[in-house]
Length: 184
Image 1 (cartoon, one colour):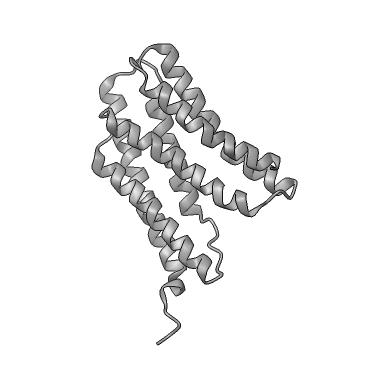
Image 2 (image 1 turned 60 degrees about the vertical axis):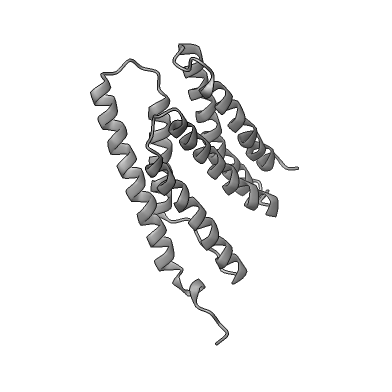
């Protein structure tokens, strides 16, 4: 197993570690809060690191192509579901965000079956940035004015939903040919 894949697997291992620390009672003890934040940020940064290592040292593998996007989805979806479980995010919003991830996985599978490559788009990258910003912002254990904190979370959540939906529409429009049946 090469270095890039080991970094990706480390991200997968960090997911349950994050969840255990985040869901530990009481979370708001400063040590748990900072530890959860550090674990999540380390896992998120590992995504950029494994991609960089794989490209720079020509370590791109089929295993990496499979596990890297899966690890990304597991990391983000785990945090969003945990936030819903403790009442930090509304279920309807998390369902929209996770549904987009399932839809995109299906779209990528269809493209793969037709031997087409779906390149990452700027909208998809912005969506990921918005998701990570929302998740990380909600983890920061600073005693902020609750109204300001809630307003920022609401804005980040709406931005994340809009970018998620728009990026799915953009990917679909750019790859509409994958829906066309060849046999008639």
